[in-house]
Image (cartoon, rainbow, N blue to C red; front, side):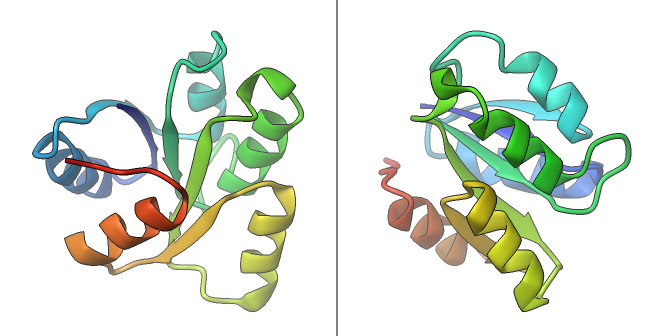
Amino acid sequence: MKAMIVDDSGFIRGFLRTLLEARGVVCVEAENGKAALDMVSAPAAFDVALVDVNMPVMNGLEFVKALRSNPAHSSMKVVMVTTEADHAFIEAALGFGADEYLMKPFDEESLLEKLQMAGLELA
């Protein structure tokens, strides 16, 4: 499995990478939605993107909207991982095509549960 971690926080990217790589997931990191979108050139390049909402250059909602506008990336799962608890953000993320929404702070169990709910199974 291959995951893209999209967050402007190096700490969060590192934390997610550590949790996922311990389960055999290959991880790639991006600091913002634009950098992530540039990496998603080939269809099915990634199985999942873990995406923050609040980032410079291109935020997570803009990223999801742009990603989902390309049918070649329809099979890629998107889990928003953010501090935004406002119901409007959750509705917007899901409306733009996110599969799940995980609130920060989170633990390994919560992350694995959200990935499973999105239809992904980890070792």
